[in-house]
Length: 185
Length: 395
Image 1 (cartoon, each protein chain N blue to C red):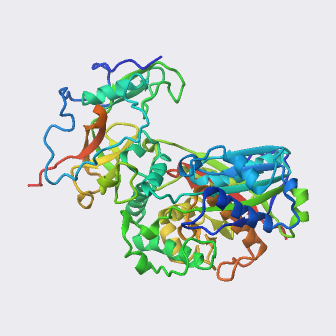
Image 2 (image 1 turned 120 degrees about the vertical axis):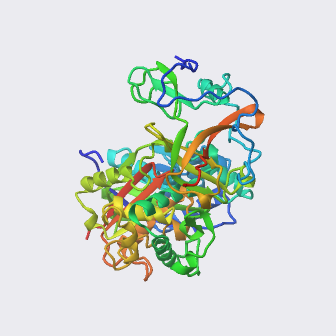
Image 3 (image 1 turned 90 degrees about the horizontal axis):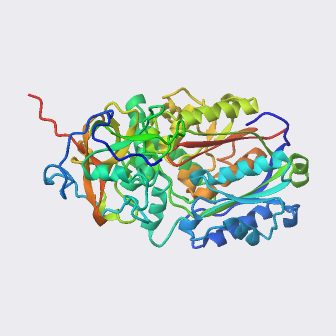
């Protein structure tokens, strides 16, 4: 059974705040001068467009991304939360799954910076930061690009927040942005 | 390994091509390894070989060639009648071929098996080769962010430093040792260069905190080993290396499930099973060929294999405990850091080194005196799979 479409009422481990539909998906503010340049043109190393329901059964994940939400599947039998989204539960192998929202906030568990040796289409984007994000309340971490601050200014435990950004061919993907914390008084 | 009746398996010979950025194609590297492998066994005729196991990680992408096992058979002039196959397990493809040969011989399916590992990694467009490294990770979810191995192992180093106080100088100590051994290995990629810790700590950063000297390289090379059923061993060599234990463990794939990066539970699990299967312990091992794809890898491996306590791997190398004369000599071949890392060839080359060491024929400055028990480890991908072999010389 194909996982059902995301339902806004489905309980997740964290509630997604609504993000308006639209073309400007990348963030709720324009890029700032100190932001590292986006890798462009970003390739997803795909040989076909897997965000399209003609090619994948987890198209609802990408549709939710376009709505500004980070989702995954949960097994309605054993309750386990999956990453990446699945079409059958890796634990009990049942196919009755529901889409749920993941937390948008987390912290940097580990990070580094790619300075060279990047794959095709990303060579011009170096250096860029990648890291493992400890999602608040989720049973796993997500590996992702980290934007908003250069490597040298980052520390372990840094708060980060999920965001989406447009990819060529009208697709969309996710990354995490360092949360600006006001200086202590 | 499973307990129960099975036949004994021995390695009797082998050979290694020069590793490096080679002016040679994938088939040419295979032929070189065949010449050296058969050259080491004057009493073995190619027609006696009943099985072939080929370790190659990505010939489809790197050499645009699939179905490589019959290619190797033809290049080596052998006509397998029992088993012919290729194994792919990324960086552990070579050891995977050795384990498959072991299983075939132990079960009675094969009597004489050739194991050949090869990889051609240096291409005119290295971004193309780097793309093949990104797909070793979970490509649509992890590799897609642009990461290959260096940033992952950099995160391992970051967490190990954070939790245990491991230092950049201790990372450099691994590289200094392995490059020093490589300088005495004519098949190593890096020759004639002295890498002091001070010099290593001045090299460019690849993925912080890892510098160039902390990373193994993209390498072309091939290696061949011959494994036989026990009763055949003495016909072919006076000093076989007996395969007395093996284990493997896979714990995750997507990095979401990697757990604490500074501890490798899968290696700890496989290590315990390896020692149990052979009735030996870490204190019995005199030399170890460990998978030092990055300096931090070797440090974590000391700990998980029981050569030192958890968190003390940095101090272990700093104090010379993994050097000649220490508790266990690690990577006297020069390691992946010094020899380079042609994915499919690495595991087979480690085994051939172990045969030389157990036969006492390694060059001075690298020979581990009186070595009788040798451990071989390969990790693959993001250290999500660990593969182990234990080899022993009989006196």
